[in-house]
Image 1 (cartoon, rainbow, N blue to C red):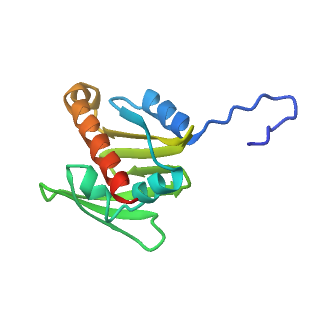
Image 2 (image 1 turned 180 degrees about the vertical axis):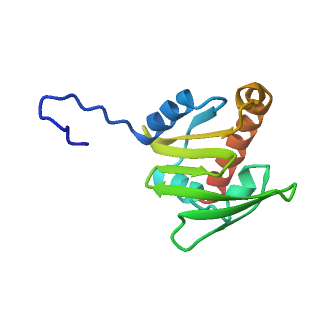
Length: 154
């Protein structure tokens, strides 16, 4: 829990999924997708943080990911050969990745017998809000692919 600046001040801590929801609510055009997966947190987060191996398998627009040794940066190449360098912030249950034109994030936390997993994505462009409705259906398919990958890791 975060220590308040003053002992009488209220403190509001959010679990990683709630943090991602707040981020999605404040970023124009951001689309968030979430589900409770029937798998332990450790297995879900192992798949989520396999940026080079798993990310291209469940996000359809990604061809390859090459992360540096400490996973603070990644070079992502899309199927259209577009490439971008992403800054990555990775910690247990939380991953935020952003390039000049794309913002993406993943979050997870235990939820009953399973794990609540969420991810968001948006373009960092002036027209991102206009494009969001057309891109939103892709997120549901990506979430189903992610869930299948988690199932494969048993």
